[in-house]
Image 1 (cartoon, rainbow, N blue to C red):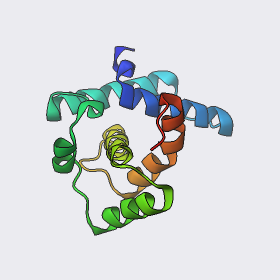
Image 2: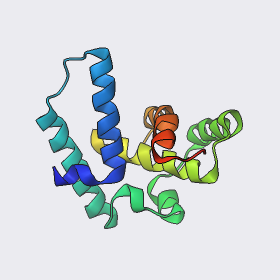
Image 3: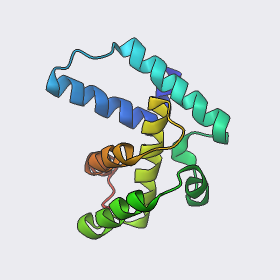
Image 4: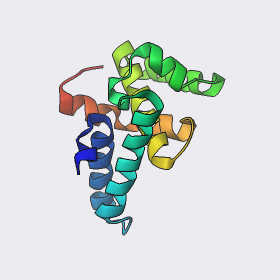
Length: 130
């Protein structure tokens, strides 16, 4: 349970629970999800000494390299949705967390797309308009 207290992974975990309830999906049990979240948190601590939510922009640029396709997606989000610099880095942190949950070395296009899909929900909850 302590692993779920990390804000970034906790946000993803809570959002996933809501989506599962809305869709009435018979997916993984809460224990399985909690174990996956704890494992992802431990990966973060081993890789960078802190959880993803505490990464600086410079650290994110090293840990989450963006290829041409990802840059194009995020540029489009900046143009279309008015994504701020703060919002941009928040998306990178969530995408990194999603990749950690999936056991991936680097986040790919689907993780960035999913992170962008959570943006408005996370922003409203924490009271940020970016």
